[in-house]
Length: 185
Image (tube, rainbow, N blue to C red; front, side, top):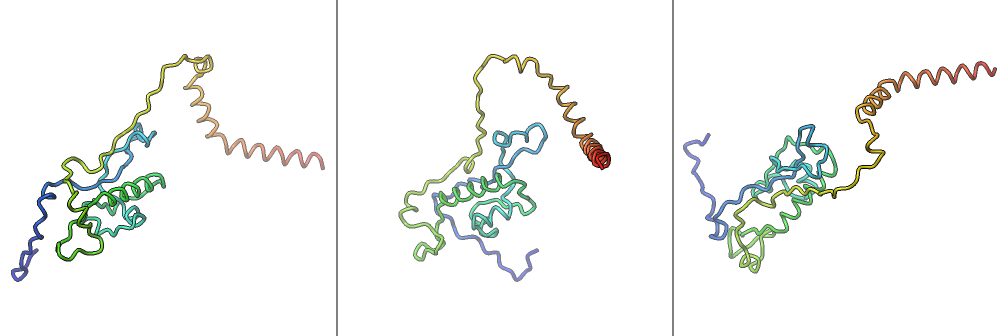
């Protein structure tokens, strides 16, 4: 809560070319449901914010990130290196395209853009670096005899049974091997 002695300090007026809002820059995130997360290359959406690990690898401080239009979600954890690298690449690409206006045009700071870049600046009105899902279309082909004879349900049941009985079968094989050794003696 603001106390009575604290003055309300407005932000400096933005240049006219950046007056339109473009929204925060979001990470690419795989969909969470079981049916859609089987192919993460295809099913990707814009996430809530970049994880702290992604920002650290990209070399952007979390407080600076929020000031330059990058959304940050400190709760997010990276479950795979592929998603981490993809989002770090997104951050680096965004940072390279970003044009930072100096607060004082007469005295630009280290991270600010040059005067030539400022002249070429145009305002982006749509979403920032939108995420596009690319689907590969397969050509129609003749079904092979092997595919016709394949019994999906039976093979799934067999795989499940093999996984369930793996330990018991290994134990029995070990006992049988020990009995063979005892018989030879």
